[in-house]
Every structure is written in C-alpha cells, then in structure tokens.
Image (cartoon, rainbow, N blue to C red; front, side, top):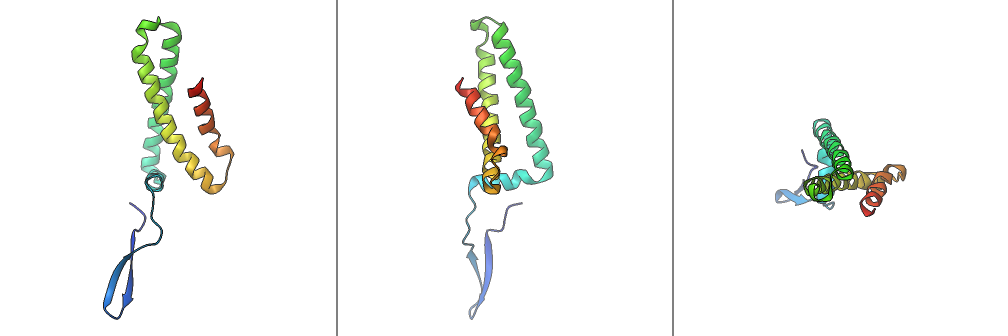
Length: 115
C-alpha cells in the first residue's frame, strides 16, 4: 500500500482527477512500505542476518591469512551496504521527528566504514 497519489475535485464538468501537491520521494515510499508490521519484521531479520554476516567476516579476516579473506571482505562490504541503506531510512525518519539519538547508528556506521 502506498500513500494516496491523487485526489478528486468536483467542478461544473464533472469529477476531475488531479495530482496532489505533495509528491512522495522514493525514500518516503520505502519508509512507508517498511513501516507496515510484516515488512518491517522482514527488514529487521534481514539486517540482523547482515549483522551476523559482518561479524563473521570481521572474525575471519582477523584470523585468516590475507589471501584467503577476499570472499569475506566482499561479504563484509555487502553487509555494510545493507546497514547503510537501513540506517539511512531510519535517519530520514529520525530527522522528521527531530530525534538526534535515533540518528546515531548512521554516524557510527559511517565511522566504522571509515576505519
């Protein structure tokens, strides 16, 4: 389900469908879609799996020799990408509600990728 994209106005010629003034961006549509309970639970499970994959990749890269860790490095990069998408959606929601503490995971993820 998406937010309403059109409205009807009545004029002398009958009913005319017009576009609403507010145009929803892709991020707003995604956050609206993920706010429903079923898809929200699926997304949280997906990010939990990415978290576990990232921790396994970090552990394997610290123990294994560098030539064996190319696959784990790719898995870690993919997990970081999932985190960035997830946290950017949460950051957008937090900015709308003006809650700074909810935006901290985004900053922590960017810092962890920079190190």
